[in-house]
Amino acid sequence: MKHLRRLVRIVLLLLHVLLGALLTLVMARHPADGLPSARFTAIERAWFRGLLRILGVRVRVDGQPAEGGVLFVANHISWLDIPVIGSVVEASFLSKHEVRQWPVVGWLAARAGTLFIKRGGRNASNDAAEAMTRRLGRDASVLVFPEGTTSTGETVLRFHPRLFGAATLAGRPVQPVALRYPHVEKIHPTAPFVGDDQLLQHVWQLLAEREVEAELRFLQPIDVRDLDRKLIAEQAREQIRGVIEGAAPALR
Image 1 (cartoon, rainbow, N blue to C red):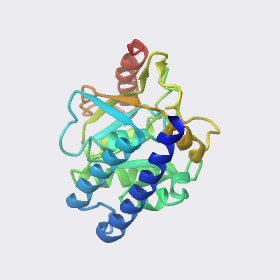
Image 2: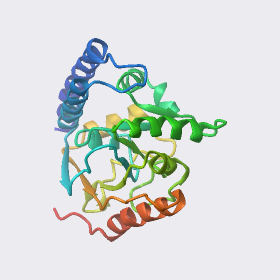
Image 3: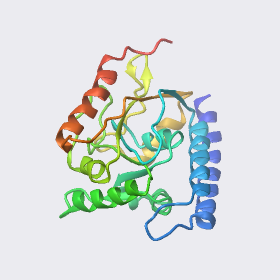
């Protein structure tokens, strides 16, 4: 059964990626600041939802995303986090520069308005924060993974505070988002994409899974007025950590 499921999903996935590439090529006409049109953003969200259906990922949402220009911050477990969150909120993502080099995916992400940060690059964080500030200042939302890397999802790593400065400069709220892939083992064993995991190998494993559940919990937005970026980062992390570390395994 797994082999048949994988075969069907591979065909559907290839067709879906091709559709995404064609739609992006035709419709991703955006201004120099990189903001896609509202119409393309709606198509992007629909494409994410289609991708998740093909992969067998079911998203459950608790709470409401804040409206207007918001800096969403979430814990980071997998490349799956992007379509999971992107299927629910309209936001530009800040991603590591390596994603820009991924076949097809990197091109699609760039055309869709993703911001990239080169880890370890000189002034990389400052450049990313400036780009984020411009987006937020135009009432566009941005989502970042302030841990800077993925984890197994059992805890929340330290949040790097520098990027939170974009919210204070733009005067926009920060909304923490707790992300889980619940399972009887507490975290679904196939969901995390960590360390030296390879993208194609991880996708291959995921295609054989009957279903993966993703849980998004939108937490209390943080008013950034009179707070420095370090304190904002600590508050956001504590909100998310309270959900992640206090969660019980899923019942099956």
